[in-house]
Length: 190
Image (cartoon, rainbow, N blue to C red; front, side):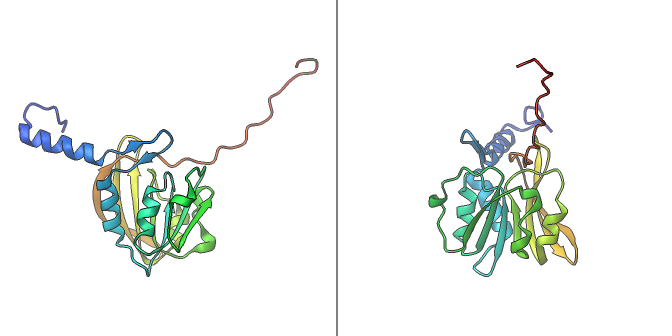
């Protein structure tokens, strides 16, 4: 249903538009930053505490990394191209890693929680393998235009959806670019 449809009551249209706006991310020129409402939803779904060890896929601006650190959990955050000022993220147990988040951080597994702060079309098997039994995973699944923020629980070697919490829009997970082959130049050309 489009919000602009004439049969939508005016008060309902206003409410729906305000909710869509409140869940919309902001953009700081390099990365999307989730709205305070989305950050709150993610934190509620994860229910982190000092007993947890969380893997964040996509450090981005570090805003959510700090939110996770504030819970007292041990936080491992991985970013493909980090640019965050690591001195602005405080906490005794915060570890920032550089790498392709698609592979997670197997050397530090198992994690009690994994959260993707970037959109994905499908959950990489590595994340499932790195999540401890009964662990929680929160991911925005979908396309660049529309994603569902879903809470999963792991039982055995499988993930089971528990709840679709919101419709969101995160920047899609990027992959490390493959090296470009050298440009062919025939003899005599510069």
